[in-house]
Length: 400
Image (cartoon, rainbow, N blue to C red):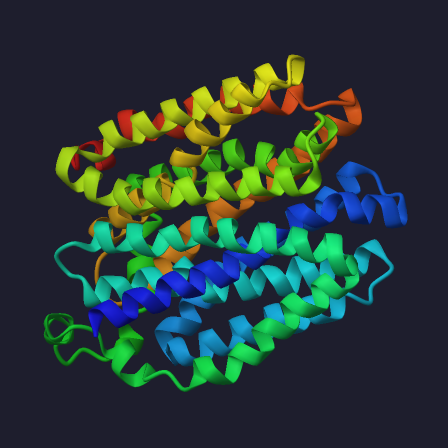
């Protein structure tokens, strides 16, 4: 059953995050259709990430109290309805509501907040490795859904593309409800025994109250925030940047997808490597790869060579998302037991606020400078703030 749970978490991450991140393929069509500025269009993605983050603690509480079936239903319904309606919209605030708020809540409900808690119940000894595999669904979603969304944009138009993506989630909703959620929620027999007879309602909020008093909680929050800031200051504008550099829209989306494919390997192995060689070493290596990828992207701003594109895709792609399983694994070690989903949901908010800030800054930098160089340089500088907690925090350093 543990393997089945892991597959479910992987697929839900693939669908939710893949469809959420497919918004990058809508930037240019929306700009052409409505004449909005790049910062206005990017603000939709910022709202999406803010909703993704601020709903995470509530989704965690809902998971701990009501279970994964309700959370799953919220995810498919919110994302499906939001995107189905999005195909008929004409105002920016409507995109904020349907794609931003509804989409963000839906992606959170299907993402790592419930997955991290379920995996910790079914994989008590190799948690980081299993979390890494589930996290790889993010990269797989980028590989599958972003080129698919670009194909839909090119063939049937952006409105029908939203209709198809939203309809897909609504069709899958009743199928997801048929899963054996009672068994899935129960967890491994060792986990059930560890709970004893303590009522769950007495254990949900105590870990969060203790967590916010811990320096480890804030160190993980800093790592989550600045890692997302590094990534999303660049990725939201990547396809538009490549198109403006002379590549076709499908080529740009495919490069974005290949980077997502490479992240599957990085994310899938980072947790296991961290358990074996130490979290600080592996995190530092991944950030070094991210920095090299950004350096290649910066070079493309002056000389758009396919070789620099290859360097960006390889280095940036292999490290994209690789910190997620490590941070999630450390969260499980620092704050184990009932209420973990609530604690992780609060930490996840740091990640989403960082992503929203990065997305908003990417559009603002573009509008102010007319290019992408400022965004890339800002992202490169932020790498130092993202990696520093693993070297400075005593709570994190004890895990190597």
